[in-house]
Length: 161
Image (cartoon, rainbow, N blue to C red; front, top):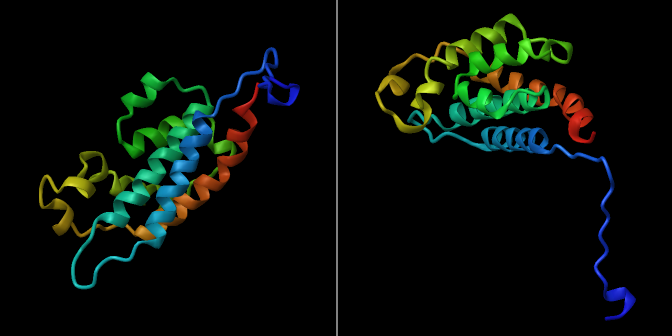
């Protein structure tokens, strides 16, 4: 084996890389991009955009929580509850990076009536189709976008130790 064929391994001492929060945030971006690209069929309701935006918010909040040191078992206890995840993130310092508006909070709370029950995915009841969805999906979209942007710095700051 010639010197140029040898495998080169760098093994820095005392370096820890934490990428889970980074990748969760990237997935949040992907779900939001899919939601923004989706066009509902004409003349019928589609829950796809609702689900994609809510899932993006869930992933972004959990990315922040991971970065803030929130343990996996505690993140799992949040299940898919956006309000619990938002409250936990605020308790973990989200407000230092991001201020949620009253309208955004109301939209998250209203969407949370259906999202944790998987109503945007499985239609366990007809509530999804017939519920008036008295929240503005565009407000949730903008909230998700702002949230993803604002958690970038705190996540970057904790990737390497």
